[in-house]
Image (cartoon, rainbow, N blue to C red):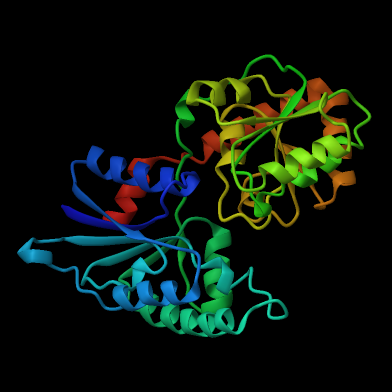
Length: 341
């Protein structure tokens, strides 16, 4: 089958979303499909640029570009799912979050308020025209139904390098790898470090726009001996950091899916996440595979202290998490079969 995949491209930004796109293309090719990837240049601001890209995508016919046959169009992101094909399958990673769950009417500019109305109309109309709609997770499906009244089917996939994750001896640190940005809420973990009664260390991996603010927090509270910002790391280092962690923290706000908790479960590590963290709540079972706590430093600190004080129980929780994620049978061939059925 000849398949065209559409997704966004934000120059010099690389994270879970980009890995998701690359892995889907690789999986389709591994199943002997001929695949082309069409990346659209996306900017989060100004609003006028978002509207211009919406206008470009809206109704753009991809059934036979330049006379080349396309058997199926798979769209992953806004606004690319506005493009048109008779066999158009949407696998929704997320919508434009600034227009939905992150929209604050009190703080929004007039331009953003107008854009929000246009996006809502665009999403309802264009997504309704898709042959089928899958969602990246149950949380993404819930948002689509809540905001736009459109049903979708959750379709899960394994995180990158799931088969390479392994569990090793704990070196008494909690690991949190992610882009350093406000929604990931690394600051909650830094604040929690001030309240720990055990000697557990906090290792935060990744780069991002909040790094300077986090560095100032660590300096202000004299946490240099307890919290480390690791910066960028190699894939081998990432796997090793999971391998030797006591547990993995993921206090992000309303995540779509969240690779970090899944990677932790494949590595046999207990997960600490928050009650408003979204996607991870579909996988973490409190008291069995990890801890789900209120998004407050004191609650995070208490959870980490409990895990550190009971290493045997923490190891058992990690093993239970690994058994749970393996039992789900997440695989790219299953994803490809669903998208190409």
